[in-house]
Length: 259
Image 1: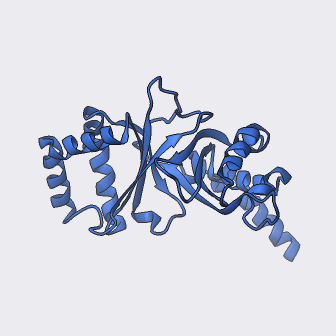
Image 2 (image 1 turned 30 degrees about the vertical axis):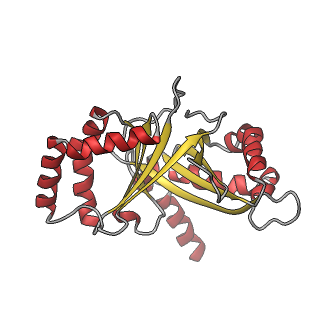
C-alpha cells in the first residue's frame, strides 16, 4: 500500500499541473552577485583565478559570466565581485552546487587552509529581474565607466509595489534624462528582508558624473511631482529613513564582459 501511494504521489508531482508555468519564479532567469573577500595580499591571485577559470569552471557548469567588478578606490577589504546569470532558480542552485564540488574551486573555499587558499569569505546573493527591468546584455564602452549598485529598503512589503510603480512609470525615464544608464533591476531572493528591497545597477561616466546626475535628478520638477504623488498614494515615504538607500560604486576588471 505504501509503495502504491508513493507511486501515485510521484505521478502527481510530475504531471503538467505541478510543472513550473511560464513567468512563474521558477521559470524566470536568476542572477547571482558573488562577493569574494580575498585574504591579505591575495587579491591579485583571486583575479587570476577568475581569468583562468571563467570557462572551465564557471561557464562549464552553466553560468553566463556578465561582469567582474571591484570597488572604486583603495579596496582595503580585498573584495572581488562576479555577476552571473542562470536560466532558472533550479539552474542557479545546480550551478552553485556543482561549482563548489569542482576540485578547481578549492582555492576559493573559505574553509580551505594552506598556501593555495585565497579567500577569507564568499557571499552569494540571488536576484530575480523585475518585470520592468531592461534586458541586461553586458557591453564594453569605449569610454571609462563606473557602475553603481543601489539597494532600497521599503518600510513594508506593501510599499515595494508602489516603489516598483514609481520606477516603472517615472524614475527610470528621469535617470536616462539626466545621463544615467539603466542596466538591470532586481528583486533579491535571499537577502534579509528581501520582500522589502529593490536592487539595481546603473552605469555612469564617473563617480563625479553620478553625483552631478543625481543632483540634477533630485531637482527635476517631474521627479518632485512623481515622488509626492507616489508617497501620497502609499501613505508615506517609500524607503526607510535610516539606511533606506545604500549606494556602492564599482569598476570593471580588464577581462570583464561588462566594461
